[in-house]
Amino acid sequence: MGGRRSLVAATTLVVAAAVLGACSDGEEDTSPPTVTATPSDEAPAPSATRPTSPSPSREQPPGPPRVVDTVARNLSVPWGIDFLPDGTAIVTERDTRRVLAIKGGRVRQVGVIESAAPQGEAGLLGVAVSPGFARDRTIFLYVTTAEDNRIVRTTYRNGRLGTPEVILDGIPNGFIHDGGRLQFGPDGHLYASTGETGIPELAPNPDSLGGKILRITTDGDPAPGNPDPSSPVWTLGHRNVQGLAFDDDDNLWASEFGASTFDELNLIRKGGNYGWPTFEGRGDDPDLVNPQVVWNTSEASPSGLAYVDGQLWLGALQGQRLWRIDVADGRAARPTDFFVGRYGRLRTVVVAPDGNLWVSTSNRDGRATPGPEDDQILVVDPG
Image (cartoon, rainbow, N blue to C red):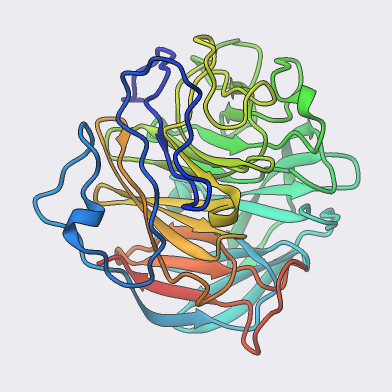
């Protein structure tokens, strides 16, 4: 894996609502000045998108994203999306337990995960297609059962899922904060986000799998090089990570739900403790890793995260918008938001094989008033 392994206290860019003003803990600080996001549904002026120095730079400001298609309608809380080599999208529905295949505008049910036990934020969650799918035909799923959260693998042949096989179980489950995102890294290992299920003390406890980012082999064993060779734990101190994405430098980024004040974008480093529940947002403990970006919770509740061409794209649930964040050399610039309130709650963001983004709405998750075609998967040209 190309990313640096040392624990880094990352520079923080604070993004707070204008009504709150700039946040400061009063300590002497050499990080860039606090910035305040200006929510906008239109293309911002170049001066509004230029980050406070020092930060990533671009040859020219990017254009605004555009919704260019809708590939699926009338879904029920589409949660995970990943793509097969032929461009078929594999999609999970949290509450129905269904696994769907989408290609060429056609939506087919290809399986039902009977062991899933949907409740609250739990159910059938993340999906990741094996990097060796052409050879092994394998798909990985994150499933909440009545007993725990677990990671299973299954095959996909002749348009149908095979029988799921459990590769890692015993992850704490709950009505809330179940994590659930799966992402293969450039190292070929599987990264999984877990939540602390509403029990904050699980997050910093290295003996619990709750409130963590895990790193495992495709057999479910702790991956070689983990901080503790006998444990799948890669990082700890997380409240509820629901987005994972690697950039071109093999850096792993994670989006994380805060409690009532700050949501976070974190740069993930091996063995790092990301501070929950000691701090929400930025703290002053050198042994804890600070977020690179924080949002007021009304503007985010961040979920899916994707990277393309120097930019992270983050779906916001409560914030009902799509955030764009320039990143370079392991540093994040000022976010810019789009589609504010236009499509409702945005949950999952992935990069499709053609370079466009697929963005799922989550208006049937019990926390919004769905429209007549919800839930949808939108195709977004990132500009």
